[in-house]
Image (cartoon, rainbow, N blue to C red; front, side):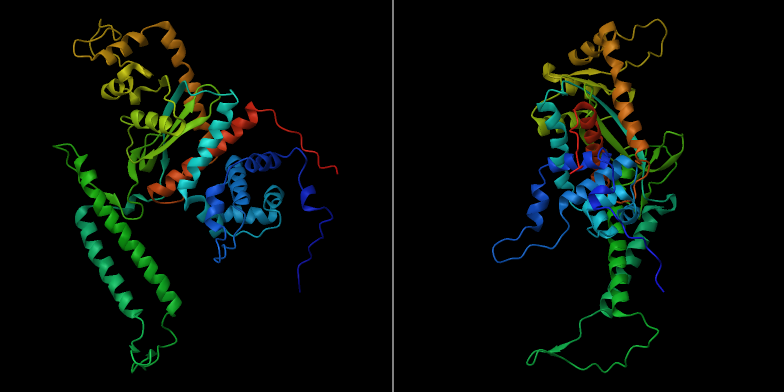
Length: 431
């Protein structure tokens, strides 16, 4: 009657080798400060804490999963049962995919300290520095189909339909009337529901779905003015916004096609290749993304990079002027080739500000060209590694959750860099 399952003769600690990467991940997580996660579940006074899986276990599972290229919570829950490295990490604790998925995206503010720690530890040891960083954007497919993008007229119609459906379900799920004197339910004169009608639990699920649908349509209409403003005069097209993932934007991808996506921005230390800044924007262009990223790094580490390397997509003269104001940071970006022949691109123009003129002259020197070679070996290398680890399409929706996923990839990348830069302790489990 029951399938035969052989008994494991080894203990849980013996199912993976002494030098298995999962052990290095666990040792790394043991050094992390996870106070925010523990505060959320800790008992306080007479109030009992929440029964929960140790956050350290879940952090270790997701970091190892990210390094191994696993991005699905359902797949990961199955691996925690059948795949030895994950079985070792959870240590016999039962985890389901809901717990894994929620832990990964529901508290993005908790990821900020982890990202800072992953950089600061190496920085304090002198293994990296933030004097020179390279930034690049990477367009990642969103969890939204092309058919979900609707025009304003269609969205307004869908809004009315969604509101009507929510109202109908609310009336159907209305709490029975009660007698104020006895606080007992008043008997209903309606006949009992037919067996074929959905149960109250099914109706509640339909209600949640309808409210979520209404929220998405409202968000799409809120974003519509932004998308309408991007249409240039004379363009014969109408703005469209997704009803399943409103922040997603149709962008030109690396293969030349156009698909709903997010633009993931990573800023990486050239020395050590550690990601120091993470952002996700809904604009397919990299212009305008350089100043806020430098501000983010300065706020996080109380140090502003002295040099920043970016590609031509960032070479906006206003951004260059803003970044170099006060001479606190120098921009290394290619100077666009002039339309007319015989003009030296590195000679300042009469309309250039002092900051832009200095940038042009600097990029004409051999020293600047040598420094700029580090950009591809840093920013593009980091983006390629993220792709190889599965950052090709988001399975979550909404800017907040999407940025949480991008941050997990950054923390996992920094952990891998820590393994490469630091001597790793030898684990001896022979005893």
